[in-house]
Image 1 (cartoon, rainbow, N blue to C red):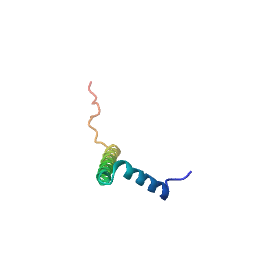
Image 2 (cartoon, rainbow, N blue to C red):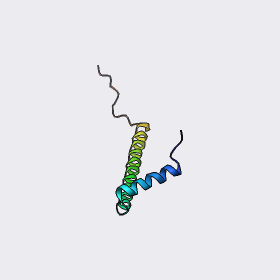
Image 3 (cartoon, rainbow, N blue to C red):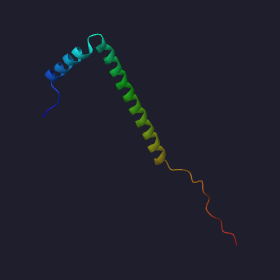
Length: 72
């Protein structure tokens, strides 16, 4: 069981051409390309935020709590 071959892609393209027509296919292709770009951009932003958060966790925080003083 392999991936999609050349003949399968050809059949899918012909079916899409028959179903949607030649005028609608370029618009659908542009929409699909835009959606893929936005998805990749959102994934990159999420990865950057996670990396930034992990870097902040790795830093040694300065202690904000003073040790208790002995009073008698």
